[in-house]
Image 1 (cartoon, rainbow, N blue to C red):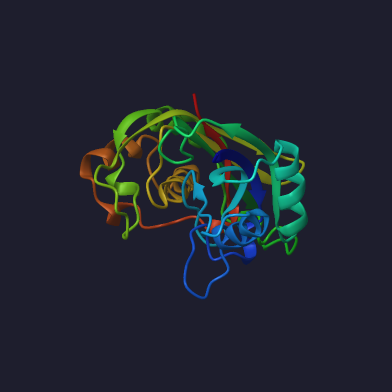
Image 2 (cartoon, rainbow, N blue to C red; image 1 turned 60 degrees about the horizontal axis):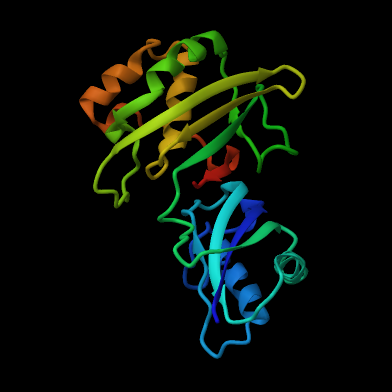
Length: 250
């Protein structure tokens, strides 16, 4: 009998070439599959399936994967076993047996991303792998005024990087927030939506920072939806500040 496991994990993306397996590259998927196959008693290779890809340098607080095992391993055994086999920049948080109809990617209902921006003239050496850096003056109130324009169903063609294979650029953002933390010297964005295009969050953050710096009018997102032109928002925030926070299912 095959058992399907839904696993939630966190990882530091600094030393990974992204989530998806690539030839001769260290990826999250490749180290996970190495660990899972050490636990498997099956003769055939066990593949893992993720809720989506993250790029090189992008982190995860709540990535979700699934895989099938012929072994009957308790959920706690999956957590303990994989954590004993994985490198220190990956941690298994939870494991749960699920129906074989569950699919980490195709049954998602939404995702939440977090983006951390470190403010200051110079790069903090202890944050350089975990935040984006913005050294220019920033009016967070202007960003807050722009965020209602982000929420809703829009054509995000101006906010997708080249290389995207998505057939449609229409996505729905359910919630978008920004908070300034005076203690850490950071501005933190969160976006919750039904799905995101290639580099969409990083391009939106870069555009919002330009609004906060008064390089763009507050409601420029409305114009950008209409023009559908990536050249109108060329900046992309660094991968280091982006975190996949949570994946939503029924």
